[in-house]
Image (tube, rainbow, N blue to C red; front, side, top):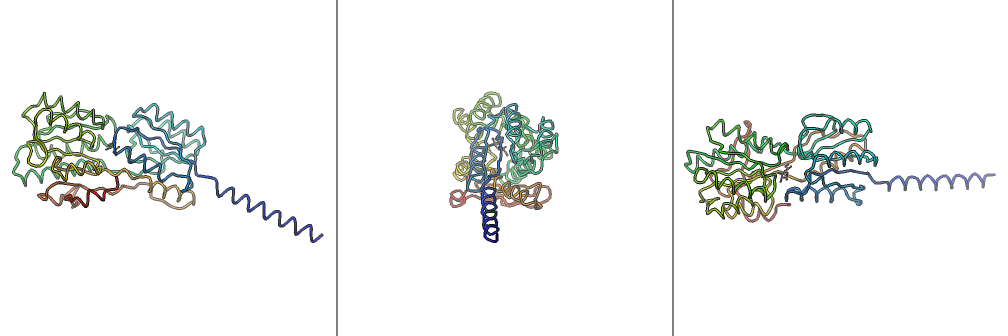
Length: 336
Ligand code: GZL
């Protein structure tokens, strides 16, 4: 009898260990609905997610590139619900139109983590990791004010090449810069959508060179790819820009290749937008898995980069912020 019990006990232990082993190997299923592939920033954001949500880190990632199409992005999320994802991550193409699908996620009991851009018409998500786009726009304006003063530039006539219409990044950068422009009495001659692409930036800048020839001394591009396109258009129009040029050229994102343009004096400044939200999202998911507390709103760290040392700090919303004067060492060390 004792022998039978010993065998039964041993069998039960083997089965339970097998179950634990099986359970331990079950990945965390994550669905990620990405904006698209419109810019180098986006490429870095996607790569970061694919690096973090890997099998080695205990994940199985389902990735959808929505190609800047909100309908595709919403469909992707509904498919993630059908597939029974454990978590859904979304970088919202635009700020609105989200409450219905987020309610469906909530009803399905699937936590949603929003990264990068913002959602303004629903709070039915569990965490957000991204940038303060208003601060990015304000920092750009405060730096330009200090830079113009240092250079003895009394009049600012600016042209803005906006990002994708309705995107939180576009809205924040536009509103932030305009707040300083209005305070300082600058003129914003025009502000058109370049859709965060190089082609879009070139097209808008070509139009600006026609319509505002000789009238502007500042071009604000809302991302590096647009600034690359704007450079091409100004080259073609024989307009000089950057350090010692007729036009101050400013960008956002701070990709490594773009910071090389700043260091080389082709651009005057670049305001970082950090694409590396995935590591923080990983921490949040692991905390959720363990039933632990987590930060539900996380701003990623960002820096402001310039070519010259006329301005080494600015004040944004009453807070002093460093302005980083680039060196080759800094550029070479950039993560993306
Ligand atoms: C900003 C991000 C923007 C980048 C662009 O957080 O959403 O979209 O600034 C990207 O480069 O296309």
